[in-house]
Image (cartoon, rainbow, N blue to C red):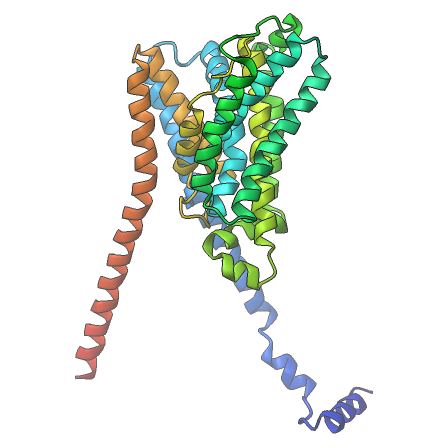
Length: 376
């Protein structure tokens, strides 16, 4: 039967028959495949332990160790609780922000979206609305804010930097129009207590359970789904991504919507944690979010980044800020430190890339000279 099939195929196509034994001999032997598989596993394990995400985790552990040894009262349950409560808004927004930056875009309106959500939440509560209905409206506000950004970027074709600078001012202005200079603070005590409660005696806030769910969701989305694997491709080259069938505009649009929704959730968290709905809530946290994302290894030019690295970047910045506060350092210095981390996280990878390129060029020049000397 195999001989007949081969003969029939050759007669139809006109091509020479393929000898099955020769075809099988062209495949790598099973021993070679096992060796390649072992080499790939070793390479993957080495990248996992020496990649940017792993380096950021090592840096986080070193930061915590230094802070614990040098700052009094840093290594305590109370510090764990307050540090995480401060880090939660940055940590939440950093997840979708990382994905947006990986696609080569940016969203500067996240803090204003949280402020607008907080203002609307206060006004609706003062008007007698129930908490479930208010939560739904707040999430819808996040959807609309993100959709406006996404539509202007993907449909109109405007740069995301210019669009979100505009909506940063627009959403903050709308928050001021909605609630004015007033503040609403009479939220249910049981609800506000929940948002500051801890899990047993660990000091870990109860809401970290929900934050972990958000981290896992975006981690799986970026690293384990076909949708997430398209994001670095878009960041490297939108034309190439479109050529292989990625719907670039659609992907970017939903990333902006995700950023808006998570920013709205941060607005709810901020309002209930501090038991105060104001138009200026969450002002300025976009700088800390972007600094943490870039420090965590996400390239400002797009195409590269990981969720573990971003989580480590957020916790490094939060730990340094909290340690400086415990040391009595003013907020002005904290802003300077955040700015330095932001500049350093952008400049350092570029310097490393330039150094590697020069080293590679020198190595190539030495190889050419050695080859010329050998031939002469």
